[in-house]
Length: 81
Image 1 (tube, helix red, strand yellow):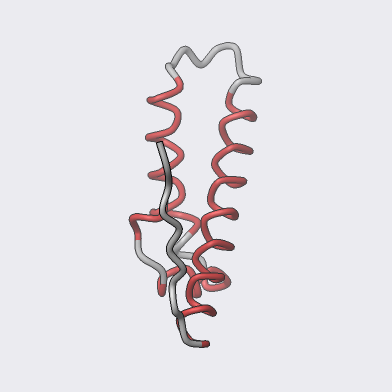
Image 2 (image 1 turned 180 degrees about the vertical axis):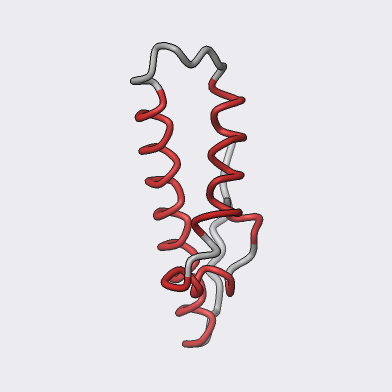
C-alpha cells in the first residue's frame, strides 16, 4: 500500500480563504460542543444526542448567525457546519 501526496498551488487570496474556513469550522465545532455539553446538565431533558445536535444547528443558523457581530460568517458556505 502506498500514498501519493499532492500539494495545492494556492495564491494569497485562496490561502486566506482556506485559513478563514478552518477558523470558522473550529469556531462552529467549539460552539456546538459547548451547547451539547451544557445540554447534558439538564436531567429533565430526555433527548438523544442526534436530536440535541439538530436543535443546536437550528440555534446556530436562526439565532447566532443573524446577530450583527456575526455577519462575517455569511461569506462562508453552509456546508461547513
